[in-house]
Image (cartoon, rainbow, N blue to C red):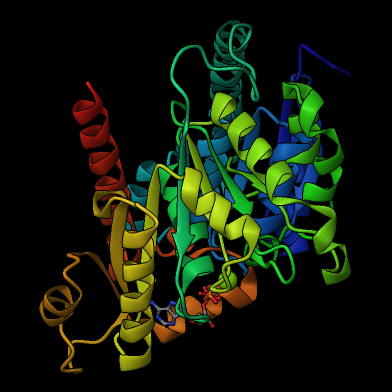
Length: 401
Ligand SMILES: Nc1ncnc2c1ncn2[C@@H]1O[C@H](COP(=O)(O)OP(=O)(O)O)[C@@H](O)[C@H]1O
Ligand SMILES: [Mg+2]
């Protein structure tokens, strides 16, 4: 560490002149060191992870992601980093939102020199205290460590028909289940054309191909090395092979061994799948603790769901292990959840609304909607499903006892 006694600051503003002004105000303060300048919310998140500053001075209105969303994401990932929001005075409603997002301070633009340096010194002191506390706490818990006692739960997201929303739901659900106490990993079980990494904007790194040959010698370090850390949340990602011709280099046996090893490290292992019942998908369904079965509100989807349910009855999958979710729900369409429940003899336990714009934008940007549109109806429906998941798992545990 270069200057351990200095407060390390990152400035975030899309206008270079503003950044320059702030830099000038701080340049002669012996306790403050500016270690980076970011121009957008996304860049701020990247810099936060890369540079681990003590304090971030953050603008609100920026092109790609506003400063409040960035604040919330950074605070969730790095609780020790303190954020000071700079805003034009009349945006007073932002103050409350800034505090809710976890900002430490709120100054109007342009700030007075004293005001700014005092705020940074206060925030810096707190950051250093928080960092020390976190270090003490993390000496016992590391990111990929064997969790004593109970095994994590394998949750397979499946639909017998393509394009109904499995990957959308798997990615958003994984993020909503993730917490400090419930570390979560998402595994792409679509070995041919997997797109989980694309949905999370995290392509081009390690994949399951790096684990398959080593399934009999796995340890937390290997797993840590191969799993991608999603940069906007702390979920981990096990991506599918980079090219379809590599798919057959991963056997079902290897895939299952990886899932079972992940159970020792993570609370929730979310597996995205394909409609086609490859050996990999079938074995994942077999060993799963919970199957999230997705259907849309149309006859072909309902029909194939019905066929899948008879098949799973035959294979001895208990219906209680299935959490049936209707995606792209539009109340103007006559096929209601009640009617589907009745005709399939399987209760629709989750309903996700049709939200063309939010979903398409989020997929194209590679930012799951649960991050940026937290309070939208569709995100609330995902949280409700996460609660259902926990409920069902708790019931399973009770019944076992
Ligand atoms: N609730 C929804 N509202 C609107 N569009 C949706 C919704 N869920 C999924 N989609 C759209 O459906 C398409 C397929 O979704 P995807 O998650 O890739 O399905 P699958 O993994 O089952 O093939 C995507 O283009 C996505 O934008
Ligand atoms: Mg998919």
